[in-house]
Length: 142
Image 1 (tube, helix red, strand yellow):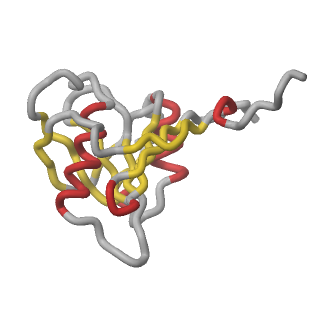
Image 2 (tube, rainbow, N blue to C red):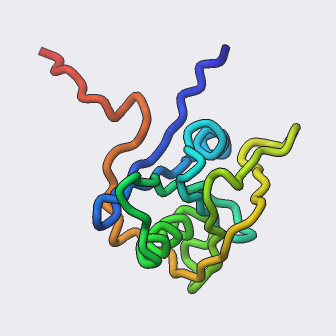
């Protein structure tokens, strides 16, 4: 057993939608393959290294096209294309994302989905917490 502790970045979009963002290739694997539910939405910038981003599905609502574009903009921001103009971002349900046998960390196959063209942007996303041992309150040293 390993001591792997995934570092997941959490954001909240308008209307209460939750985003999860992987910080490393190993975190991306954990996020996309282990943590994501089949109905969650998955995002990744096209043809550039970057974080996998999960928009959590809700039982009470479907995300609007604007919410999907906001999630895609966060995926673009958390990629090597952060300083580019408009970039394509893959968008699909997590059920369509799989890990090829023997592939390196962070590599996945996407069965189908669509591509959204967005500008990298996190202004509408509120960062909530990072999933690490450092996000817990520390006790005072007195």
